Each structure stands twice: as C-alpha cells, then as structure tokens.
Length: 230
Ligand code: CA
Image 1 (cartoon, protein in one colour):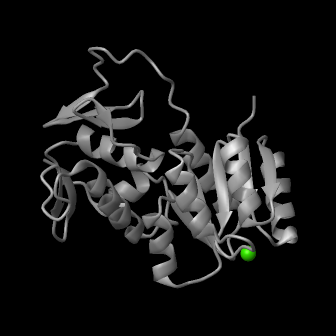
Image 2 (tube, helix red, strand yellow):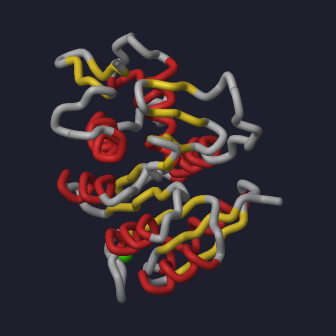
Image 3 (cartoon, protein in one colour):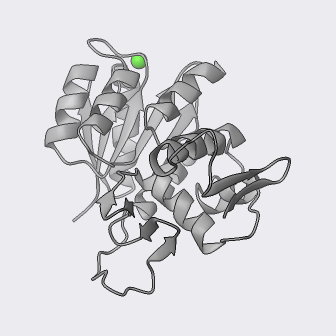
C-alpha cells in the first residue's frame, strides 16, 4: 500500500502540481483547499505525511498544525511557507511542525524532504521488554519502537522528528554533536537545511523531557559546538 500524502494548499495550481508529482513518485495524494478541510482530513484520513501551506482560508496553517498536534497525532508535518520571515518558520516549528520549506521550492527539494520524513516515520514496531534498542538515560526511557520517551512509565508524546533527534543524541551519549551533523543525519537535509530548525526542535524537546527546560540536565548545550546528551 502506498503512503498517503495530504496536501493542504488553497492555490489550486500549486496543489495540482504537488499532487501530480507525488502521484508520479508512487504515493497517494489527497488534497484539501482550505484550513478547516485540511484539519478534518488530517484527523480522519490518517495521512502518512502532511504538506501544510501557511496562508489558507478558514483556518491558517499554524492553527491546523497546532490542532493536529493537540489531537495527539505525531504525523510528520512539512510547512510550506511563502514568507521569508524567520519568525514564521520558528512559529511553525514551535507549534509542532517537523520541517518547513520556503516557496518557491523545487520539486526535487520537496520530494527529497518528503522521502526523508516518510523514512523516519516507517520504523517497524517490535516487542520492547528488555529490548537492546531502548536507551535509558536517568529517568528517561527512550523507546524507538514506540517512537516516544517514557518518564515514570508515561509517554511524553514526541513527534517523529523530536524522537529521531533525542534518539540520535542518546546513541551518541556523552559526545558533542554539531548542529550540522544533526541537520544531515536527523533531518537528512543534504545542504537544504537551516540550523534554526535544530535549535527550535531542541527547545521543544526540552519542554517535554526536562523537569526545568531552562536548566536542562539531559540535553545540554555546548556553546559554539553543538548539543550533547548527558
Ligand atoms: Ca496559500
């Protein structure tokens, strides 16, 4: 069965081109032309990934993103932003988007991002008891099969990207990882990335796993170098 890709975009010509290329790449495109319909389909059609425009009628892309995350869904979300403002990109990531791409973008770039995000979302589940893949750090239990972190047996509710980031840092525990390394290995940006994406995702992650996000004990900043799992 091919992966379903939800396209939320009010400009029909752009939605059509996206749907055409997605279909040609072997995925199943589903289009929504305003924010309210996008949200409805995001919650009812069970997409494998969402391409989400920011400027939309009915409900903007930020609100759609926020509500999708509020519903508990961890589906990868790539924001399509027409604006260059740094604040817009950061807001989308803060609300739980995994990635963003600035219009105008090339179809090659978009499809590379889609593939990278889908790959990240397709890890196979397996029994977790005594599992060597599970990494424990202090009170955290980082479980790649559940794609989540557990504190006192309770899932903290991470998105795919947040999980991939913390799992990568946990595997490299005690070693400083540069933002460039994280962009290439976790996001697989291959030159398209923006280091700000890493910083915002780290901030979101700390809010979920640290007791005091301002004084992190798990995910440490090594100024001028990168990040490290304690
Ligand atoms: Ca638009």
